[in-house]
Image (cartoon, rainbow over all chains, first blue to last red; front, side, top):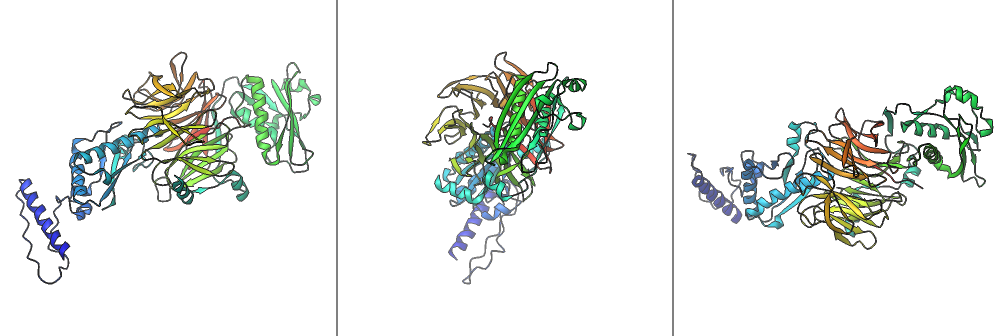
Length: 176
Length: 444
């Protein structure tokens, strides 16, 4: 009951914040009906705001940035390109709001060149994402980096289309 | 560290070579088949006559002479005569009619015999290398091997013949380690660390895991392998004794634990560890387990390789922007850059003399090829012609470089002579992926 109340309050707060932050003419969320004495069943009427980056449900909501968990990199580079920063910032907000959540940043490289060097490259990419999370005030205890180098490709053709999908950091939640 | 060693034992299948041989009558995995792609023009004609068999035990299907002949032929330096073309089958120098062999245009002839040792525990192989033109005996030797080591004995005969005619020791009585991948990209993906004789025979699975295995490397006595395992989900450096089956987690720190390389005296292991924040070269004393950090640079520092005298360590670093080979004293100190040609030089394997380094080379990030860097002339010679060649490993006699390559999207092994004239393909008979080759030291 208590948690349900807090939850509703959070959703409302997030909705208000999101509405303020953005200049879109979206319909503001309808205020929740006051809780009755009966136990709150399922917040079916509780609409999910995809921009509420503290809400665990958004991790599985394809409309939310939180559902995006792969950061791609250029060849032999480990700097996070600007288009991926909002994704990392969304996860930073989630991790700040959910102190028991933990992420593993899995760094990967494409297959070109030496396997051991690529382990280093994968780690460097993982570290770059970790640095951004830290810069967004995520406690370091919540983040770990592991590099798989070129050992875990998602695509196995030896061409750039494939390679660019393999040069990545996967944000894997080990605890939500 | 102890607990992680135990969990590793639970999660991967670890078996000793001896045990495996006892458990399975058939090889544990597919065999590598070695084909010559390019040989030397004017390879030396030689004939190895069938060795006389004087033992109660039946002669194995592949006789000693056949193995010697195949070894020499595969080297690309010899044109070994097929047994079917031989008119005579002498087994002792006194039986040789040199005129016949001259007519067959053979320069050298090997004859010999095999007999059971008096204790019945092995074989004695006696052999002679003859110069067909002068009729002289160039080499007469005998060696004793255990019952199960007849093939190995034959490889040692080939080594001696090779040395007598080429002036450098052969590398036939050696092994190769490699990693196979079965079901790549599927849920059943299986990685195996395999050790086989240098001719591809007798493959034995040392470790099997659902997680990647990479960077196998031999101890100088060829009894142990160090490699990188991801069995726990994170990288670890493991040292595995091939004879006892015992394995030991040597490094399982936070971050990368990679690129192991035994010192020439076998007492230390150079590795690349990122526990300080970025991959640095460390040396672990295998007795005391104390580790010392040798490089101190924020860049990637990996793939250490010892000089043959153990005084220096070569390694890959991208401290100047892109990966290049550097060298430093084995005790640390300021590294000196070694390679300057090309945008990418990595994974140095040191030749017999420190003069030659085999590396992964890329001129402009298009193709990654195996090249030999000559430290004396500072010149680089490209050996391979693939797009994604990697993991060069020198034969212990410096004659050939074994490496991993791609063909039709599949990874296989290849070898090229250090002068680039001889090329071999090493293909796994069942079409699994094979990579990460490491050629053993000479086995005595």
